Amino acid sequence: MALVEVPLHIRERRLPHDIVDFLAEANARIRQFVEDRQIRISGFVPSDFEPVYQALDAIVEGNLASGDVFCEWGSGFGVVAMLAQLLEFQTYGIEIEDSLVTGARQLAEEFDLPVDFVTGSFVPAGGEHIVDELCSGTDSWLTGISDDAYQELGLSPNDFDVVYAFPWPGEENVIAGLFDEFCAVGSLLLTFDHLEGVRVRRKVVRK
Image 1 (tube, rainbow, N blue to C red):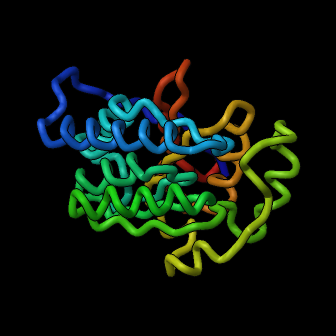
Image 2: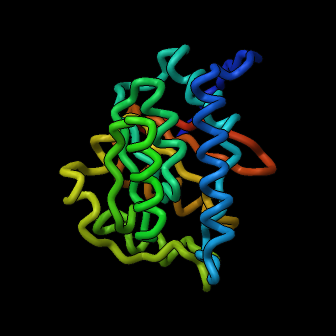
């Protein structure tokens, strides 16, 4: 298999009012969550949500996704999963830190967004070797330990049409490797990097 770059045609326009209001509340809750914790959660750094929303909007406008099932890997507060739901995806989030899952569920309930969040590892069973081989950080939050997160969702990575992740430095290859190994041909991998911005790749059959 292989991942190929998908060009995005992002229109320069103001965010819809409902998105602006949602992001304002989401960012306020994240700030409060961070301030209230005595010990920082390793690996929890929020994305820049506006360009990620614009990328999702471009995916919808361009009819680039093969379907409407979306999953956020390492969902944190679940903001990107909720943005995808606002764009009418059927959305899920997998997050290893239970307190973040609780915060995501509360935010989704506040905005009446039917997003399913579960606590666990997004590393599928059988993917531990990819993490072990490609993960460069010895103290990384990304662990090669699979659990029953997918079973709890009643889904497998092969069911997702779009996967989003915000890789920690040094983990881009892990995310891409897991996606290439376990997700369906034709599905999209959307990632964000504070330096490089958003990136979209599609899984294809290597010629």
